[in-house]
Length: 68
Image (cartoon, rainbow, N blue to C red; front, top):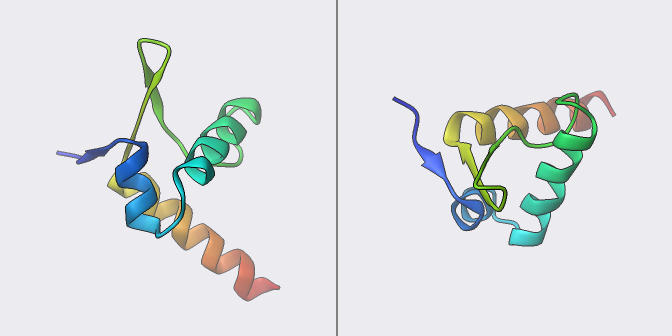
């Protein structure tokens, strides 16, 4: 079973600020899932993502940087 993270937990896992996670989630919604951080909205305000999605996003960023 996937471990769900709130914004604070996702930010801690990546070592970034909570605003960064909010921005990545907004980017995901606005790009219709093509960029940003996958997540679910609960009650229209609460954001949850999975540790697997955080890892996938991070790995994608590493590959993008390596490609230069």
